[in-house]
Image 1: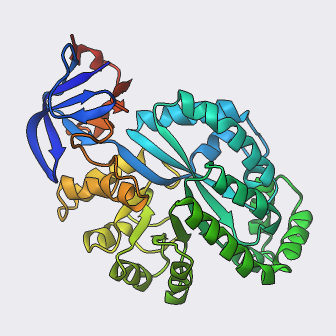
Image 2: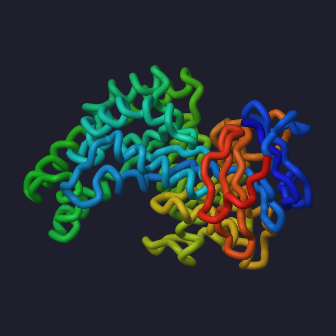
Length: 380
C-alpha cells in the first residue's frame, strides 16, 4: 500500500519544515501515488527511520537469564517486534563470536545464522549482522570467513577482550560473571581462557585473513574499544574505517581527523555518562568527535538520545537526528537510507514532539507499527 503523510513537520535536506511526505513502491517519492492511503501527521515530526550500527539487546531474548536459553526463532521474532516499535528500521545485530561457550559461542552463531533468513523475511526492520569477532577465537575463524563470503555478515567488528579477561581471572566475582554467561564452572572457565591466550601468536595472521575477506566482500569494518593511537592506526591499516567506543578522547580525535566515523552508545547520552566510567558521549558529539550513536544494549535509547541531545541546547534536531540516522547509514555504506529524499527507502518514524515517543513507523514504504490510539490518524 502506498502512503501520504500529511501536515507533519518533515526533516528533509537537513531542515525541518511543514510538508507532506509521499511513499510509493517502497520508496520516498516526489508526489503521492493515485489512491494512496493517508496518515494525518499534524502536530507530529516525520523523521528518517533509525539506523542502529551496533545493538546486542537481542541477547536478552536469546538468554533472558544465565543458563536459560530460548529458541532462536522466537528470540529473533521478539527482537524484531521490539526494534520496529522503537523506530529502528535498520538494525545491525551485534553478534559476538567468542571462544567462550554458551551465548557467544560458535554453536550460538550457527543457530543464529540458520534462523536469520526466515527472521529477515518476516521482519519489518532490515535485520543485518554486525559480527563482533573475538581476536583469540581461532577455532571459529573458518566459519567466520564463510559467513563473510556467503553474505551472512554485513559489518565486521574487531574485538579483543581476551587480554582484559585474563587479567581478571584472579577475581572470583569477575570469573563467576563470565562463567555464568558461558554456562560452565569457574575453574573450567579459567582453564579455557588460559588455553586460548596461549595461542595469541596466531592472532595477527587470523586478523589479516578477516580483513582481506571483508574487503573482498565489500563490507565495512570497525574496531572496538581502541585504547591508544597505535590501536587505531593498527586497525585502520587493516581497513577498519569506523572507530567504535574509543577509550580515549585523543583516539576519537585522531579518527575524526582521518575522516572516520566514531561510534558511542546512546545509553551513555540518556544516562548522562558511561556505565563503565569512560568518556561522556554527549559533549563529544557536540564537539564533532562522536558522529554515530548506537543502541548498544538498549534499543529505545537511540530515539531518546537524539532528543536528549536537543535538550542540552547545543545541537538542533536535524543535527542530533543525523547521529542516529544519516551518519550510521553513511558509515555502513548504505546510500539508500538515513534521509528522506525521493528515490530513497521509505523508512520513516513519526514522533510526538511532546513525549519524544514514536506514534507510527513506516518501513520499506509500508506501515509497520502503530502506537495505541493512533489509528484515528489513518485516512483513505
